[in-house]
Length: 417
Image (tube, rainbow, N blue to C red):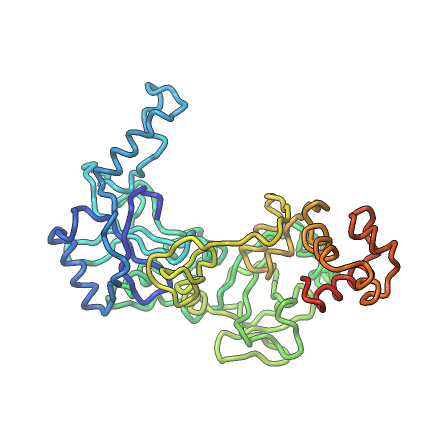
C-alpha cells in the first residue's frame, strides 16, 4: 500500500493478497503489541517467509524526514498550502488525539484493499467515517456495481464493509459469521446508455404503452452466469442476461431475463452446478465474494518474479515486461460502466485504437521478416511476383490483405515470425 507512504512488510495468509502493517521499531525489537500480533498470526498457521525480512525497511521517523525534503518541490505558496508534495495520509493518525497509530492493510490487488486497526483483544476494526477515521477506507472496486442485497433501494454500502471484515477475519484465523445474503443472485444495476443495451427490449416495448416501456437512460438489472452455468447451446462469450430494473429481490428468480446478444429469454437459478436449456445458473453473492478474495493481480509478480495468480500470497513486485509491439489506444471511458458491470466480457472490445502504420505489426514484424531471406526464395515459397515482394520489403506499397495474410503465413512456416 502506498497511500500512507510507509515501507511495509508482509505476513502471509491464506488469501490471494498480502496482510501488511507499518513497522514501528528497528530490527527485531518489536513492541509488545506487534509481538502479540505476530504470535496470533502464528497460531492461525500463517507462515512468515525468510525472504520477507525487515532489512532495509523505513521507519516512520525516516518517512517523515523524506516527506520534509520533498516540501521544497511544492509549487504552491507555503503560507497557503504548507504540506509536502509527498503527502502522509491522515489515516495514519488517531482523529481525536492526532497520535500515530498502528495501521494494518489487507490487499487483494492494487484496487482491492481495506485498512484496519486492531483493538485491545486483537479484533480487526475497519477504518470508518465518523467512527475512527475521516472516511471509510475499504475498496468497493469489483463489488460497487452490485445492488445492496439487504435493500436494493438503499445506497448503503455497509454490506461491502461486512464482506471485507469477513475476508480480514478469515486471513487472521478468526471466526467468521455468515452475512445472510450469500445465497441470493448477485444482481447489478446498469444505465441504458447506448443502443445495444436498449435494442434487446424492442419486442417487449412493442407490447407496452410508451410510459411503461424501457427507455434510454433507464436503469436495468444485470446478473452474471457462473462458469458452466450457461444454458445449453449458448456461447459463453456472447451471452449476458439483462432485464428491466427490478427492486424486489424476491422476483429475481421468477422473472424472465433477456440475453442481450440473441434477445432470447431465460430464467435463472441460484443453486446447483449448471443450467439447462431454458435456465442459467447465475452467480450468487457468495460466489462473487469467494472470487473477490482470490482475485489475481495480473500486473504483479510473486516474490520469485513469477506471474502472480489466484493462489499467490505474500509481498508482490512489479512484473518485468518485454515490449513486443506498440498500439496506441485512447483513454476515453468507452463503455466503462458496462465493463465494470461485466456486460462487456472483454474490455479489449471497447478500446478505441488509433492506428499508426509506422508501429503496426506489418511494419515492425513482417517487413523485417521479409528482409531475412532472398527475393528468389520468397518467390518460390509464396508464388508472388518479384515486384510485389520488392514493394512490400521497401515499404513502398502494402500488398492486398489476402497477400499480406499469405506472406505472414509463409514467414511463420519458415520460422521468420
